[in-house]
Length: 79
Image (cartoon, rainbow, N blue to C red; front, side, top):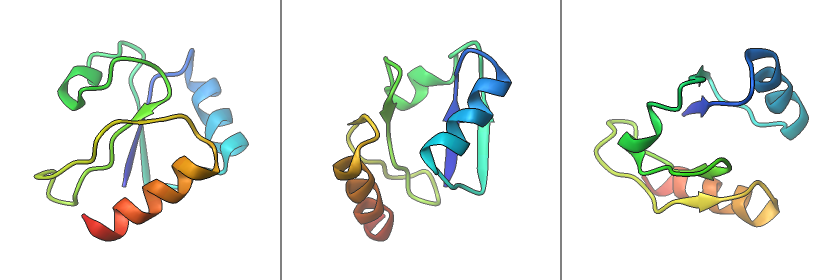
């Protein structure tokens, strides 16, 4: 899984990972947000889960509460 972060600065992106407990092998930090449109992401706190070959993806997921975390884990198993 790749996390794509565009927080205020790199230190904030690292704090986000630590504060939320998000664990991913790779997090890309893009302060320009130019990578968002390729995935249909238009706002902060939106996510999409992609298949390993990037051929399939989920609908947009909003937020970071427990229900979103459960949805992401279910999607990871299905893609």
